[in-house]
Image (cartoon, rainbow, N blue to C red; front, side, top):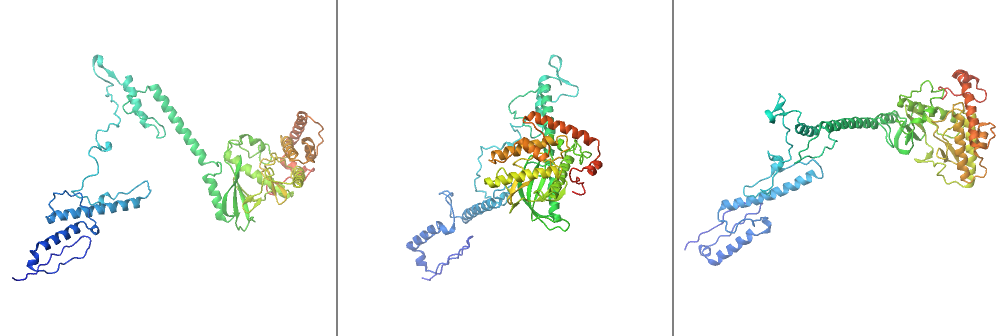
Amino acid sequence: MDQIDVSTKEVKSPWGTQNVTAPPCSLADVMSEQLAKQLHEELTSFSSCSDMGLDLADVPQDSDTSSDLMLAQMLQMEFDREFDTQLRREEKRFNGQSKVSISFENYRMVHPFEDSDSSEDEVDWQDTRRDPYRLAKPTITPKKGFTGKGKNITTKHDEDICGRKNTARMDNFAPEVHVGDGISMDLKLSNHVYNALKRHCQTEQRRGARLHEKKEHSTAEQAVDSKTRLLMYKMVNAGILENINGCVSTGKESVVFHADGGSFEEIIVPKECVLKVFKTTLNEFKNRDKYIKDDYRFKDRFSKLNPRKIIRLWAEKEMHNLARMKKAGIPCPEVVVLKKHILVMSFIGQDQVPAPKLKEAMLSCEDMKKAYYQVVQMMQLMYKECNLVHADLSEYNMLWHDGQVWLIDVSQSVEPTHPHGLEFLFRDCRNVATFFQKAGVAEALNVYELFNTVSGLQISCDNEADFLAQIEALEKMNEDHVQKRSKKAFTNTCDDGPPLLNDDDD
């Protein structure tokens, strides 16, 4: 019997596996039942091989697997499933945690034999034409103004029709107005209620706009507005400052930032500086105009109707007061430059750490006694040499640095000839005497003795009411005397102390 060589046909696999070619065999071997059984077992193991990655569990048991077309469709379906799974992974990794996601749905290999994951019972109301959550349009009255005839006539002024129209008009309110959800509720608003709600919404919108504008154009707590930030950036770009580090302290009238000094040819800039940014709102200290409106240096420029102008005068006043104190040798910050309502001064501290306030400083008895005598001496120098009264002197406006007391915050300081200058001095003396007496300084004078020591007056009275009455009488005399003299005459004829500093001198 002739020997016939039989070879299997090469089958190309989509997974790139190597083609297996069976060795030639005789016809007797082909007709052998044992060889047929062996080939059947190999075919069964090949279909369940894990290397192929096939999942044919979904195929019915009675499917006709003898057809090449059916096998090809089964393999293609499994390949499409793997491709879609990988595509979902790529889509999830690409979108991440972003709120706006990009879908790869158009690139999916949807197979006709693949069942849909979505249930037929689910209904997307957004895709339906009859949306139960869609508000019904109110009935429109014809141009003639009424509908119906006879007893069934209904005009446009009908209470029910107007009520439903008013309810529908509430959708035109601003988004921030919560009008509620009237689904399946036949709401009817009367004209009176609707008009009241409309006026309230308009009032709230105007109020919100004012608050937003006020917040954008004013210096808030530990923050600055856009114009102030622009001024600070210009200082850095000009080389006056190297950089601005952060907020050091906040108060009722200003925010203080620490900055590193730059290299500027015209101005000597310290290594460490502070930016005192005066707040552009007067909400915190509206009544402080009395400190500046009666000062002859700023009386002609005072404008109560312009808050930003008052703040600039306030910053300028502190600059002039610091210049007077520095000239008299009183320890205080040194002024670097003034830009509108931003005052750049030297930093009292070291390595971005501000010097502690006298209230917070942990001083020994000797240091506290030394600090008391320094404070009394500085008060005398301010009154006699600088012709100034601090007007807000307390343990919170005095710093302890390098073994001595430094005075800060002199924007409200006034001259003794101010209509309330002696009252402010008496208040400063009371704060200083109370603090050092509580601190255990036995040599501390009482408020009346300290006032006479600083001012050089001899007011003998142990009653505070009588003492203040005599102070008010002296203030009245000073006010009448000052009103008779002009600014120039007062500057040239002041023989009791050194001449007052003009704006150019400061």
